[in-house]
Image (cartoon, rainbow, N blue to C red):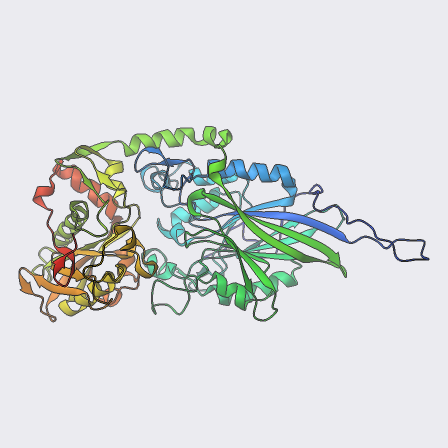
Length: 602
């Protein structure tokens, strides 16, 4: 794949003739000593700030399109680039615009109905198509560079390339390589020149790194086209090059968490959350903007094992809830700029109002999407909610499973596997999703499935399904029989997120949470009889799970019988439209329950 015209492989991005910062003023002179009539030249110093966001996920406004109202959570966080814009302008006013840079660490164009609308409903790839709202907002705010996130690839490479074309800043991915040439498919880095009052420019290199898991999670879009080697490997290649090109400061923008863990098991030799390892193993890095993990890390220091020097890491909270500030203090010594000090902090976007400039810029796009998500597609005979779905078999999750199972059965009809029983897996992606009694809209149905996952059919044995369910049941905190059960503390054992707990329909089983993980599945049955370990079943499963997401056993290597190219979310919407009425009485059943020593927990 040819390099984009904005690949800055040999050049640099000039950032203008910066004005002096108060913090960058010349240091006070000191007397040279008694009997000397002159003073030494004061040290030349300069300070600048790199601002960073990550995991914006299509959030421009402080608005939740799945509920069609202003976003709010228990901590009263706010979201969106309109809020970030206000924070950015405040920092620029304080520091001097030319003494700042603004970067992002990826996952930009997926996550809200706003971003979905301009990828699928009114796509930016159409002839004379619109400019993506995220490109419009980020251009208006004045981003200098952004790393690629894994969700950038969800809509396919053509949508990503069009988004890249619409951005006034480079999309960086030093470890996103063309599969044939093994050359960078995107710009690996950008170089930025900051002019100081000392007459000596500061060259700041921003190296972009993305997640190796793209090769698994978006195999359908990138297979045979791109490969994604490890972050540590590519950072070790590029950082020395950037230093040899005269970079005084090296900042890494990494769409990779800091924990050193992976969710895809041993399917790849690369670590998913490798930002901390990059800091530890690769000398020459001053700071890392961390993304992907959706956690808040104001400042985290990692000592490089070769130099002993601290590398400062920071991860601002997702969706534009926080803005990271890396503050750099430099001193001119021995003919070059040296980083004397780096610190990091985060600013909270709920402390400011939305920037009216961004609101005006994208108000039409916002109204179009609000109208779209409020289209009525059917009615429901009863209200359904995910509030208790993490610990109870709820009708709203059964709805996902019945849609998936029916879709797979229809796809396999008349074929070699038509006679096999079809099971289905689903997760509780949001604990606030709901289907109301009465009119059902697109936003209601779409809220069940906020991810752009597609549907597959995989062939598994009874024994493999038992393993699969045992793995899923790790999600629950072990709770002895007779001990009080607090639902606030019952789930997410060992940090397992809700989306990595699967409920499987078509079987009946109990999960004994008094037992240790790996030995919890009890009374596993199909049609009232114990499951034969050798029996064959078809599992309707999303592509994330089928590709190894969550590292569930067996499924990634199981034979693929069928795969769909459309999102499960759209399949649910069409199912509701085709029937007109959603009646839980026709599909809801209690297939699984939590127990302790045979006694139901609920």
